[in-house]
Image (cartoon, rainbow, N blue to C red; front, side, top):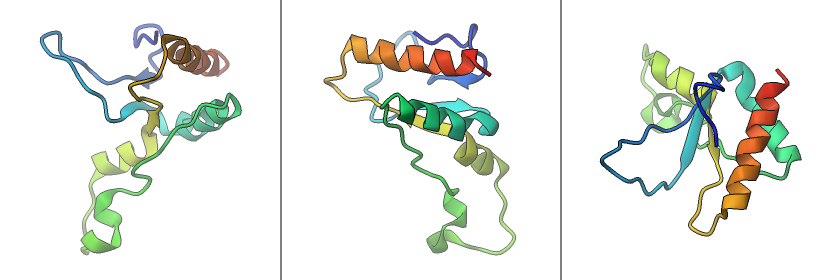
Length: 108
């Protein structure tokens, strides 16, 4: 699968050894310079992805207030990408996704 040691350009969700996670979303983080290019690359490989918060929440109309700036929210909205995750996903599909991400980062 993906390893942050081998592919430092991507950060995967951290899981504790003492617990299990039931992922509703599997969101990875990468440099904002790579995120949209990675999404396009995966789309060409017929791998769907999602950007659930393309705009930080504090910039949305319901939350707008003058003089607010949240740099972490800005950085995350520009750098996160959600990958396919669902109960029926096969190991073969997971390997295809991982290998496609590796192929992308091997070319940059």
